[in-house]
Length: 351
Ligand SMILES: Nc1ncnc2c1ncn2[C@@H]1O[C@H](COP(=O)(O)OP(=O)(O)O)[C@@H](O)[C@H]1O
Ligand SMILES: [Mg+2]
Image 1 (cartoon, helix red, strand yellow):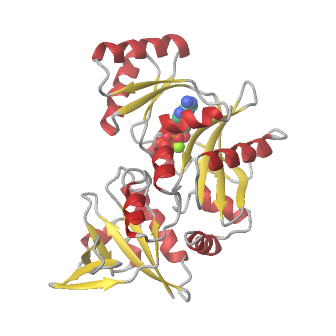
Image 2 (cartoon, helix red, strand yellow):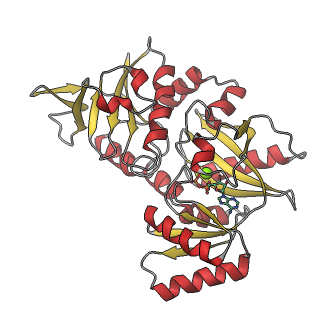
Image 3 (cartoon, protein in one colour):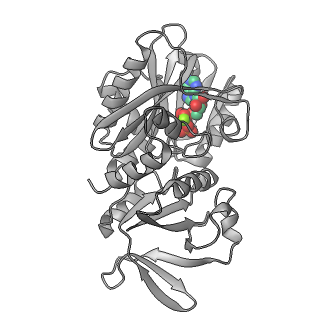
C-alpha cells in the first residue's frame, strides 16, 4: 500500500473548483493499492488532515466538519511525512506521493511544487519551474512563440507601469486590435478576472478588474473561432488525446459559463476540418515538451473561423477534474477511464 496525500482547496480563486476536482480524484483512487490521505487547505491557507465524509468535499462543506486536524509538512528530519496535530498530540503519517489537486495560485504555480521538492516527496504533475511558467500567460507566450505556433497578439500591462504608460498601452491595443479586446490577469484561471471589453471605457474597467487578480495583465486581440482543447498524458509515453470542443452559450467561456451554466456544451468528438486534430495534437505535444511538463496538462486552442488556423490560447498544468471537466473525458475516450488514469498519474510521479 502506498500512502497518497491528496491536497485540495487552497488559497486561490479556484478553491471551489479544486474541491470538486478532488472529490473525483479521491473516489477514483484504487483503494486496494493506495491509502488516501486527504488534506484540505482552507481559503486562508490553513492545512487540515480531513477524516470526515468524502461527500462533504465537492460542496466545500468539509470545512465545517469536526473531523479534521491541523496538519503540515515540516522541513525537519525528526518530523517526516505529514505532521498531524490531534488533541494536543503530534503524529506523523508517512507519505509516499502527493497528488496536488489544486488549481491556480499556490497550487498550480510552482509554490507547492517547491515545498515538495525541498521535502523530496514525489508528486503528480509538472515541476516547480514548468508550473510557474505555465501559470503565467505572458511567460508561456514567450516560450510558445519560439515554436512558431500562432497566438493572439497582445500587450502586457504591469501594475508598476506609471498610469500614463498603462493609458498608452490601452490606447495602442484599442487602435491595433479594435474591439472586443480580452483583458486577463497573467496568473489566474477558471476565467477569474477575465473580461471581454467592447469599448474603451469597458476596457479600462476590465483592466482594473484584472489587476485585482494579478500584478500583470494581458490585453489580447479577440480570436473569432471555436474553442478546442487537447489533453496530454505522460505516463512514460506522451499521449495527446483527441480534440474536445467547448461551446459556451454565454458571450465567452466565463467562470459562470464553466461551472454554473448547464447549457455550455463539452463535446469530446466535434466535427472539425480535415487535419485539424493532427495539427492540434502535434502543437500540444510540442508545447508540452518545450515547457518541460510532466504527468499531465490540458492545452487550449482556438480554431479560427476565417482562416481555419489553430491559435494557441493557454496551458493548464492541473486541469479540472470535476464531473464536467474535459481532461478526464478526453482521456476516457483514449482508453484511460478515470480509475486507470488516476493510477497512471500517481505512478508517473515516481518516474
Ligand atoms: N484572445 C481571445 N480571443 C477570444 N476569446 C478569448 C481570448 N482570450 C480568452 N478568451 C475567452 O476567455 C476564456 C478564458 O480565458 P483563458 O485565457 O482561457 O483564461 P483562464 O486561465 O482563466 O481559463 C476563454 O476560454 C475564452 O472563452
Ligand atoms: Mg482557459
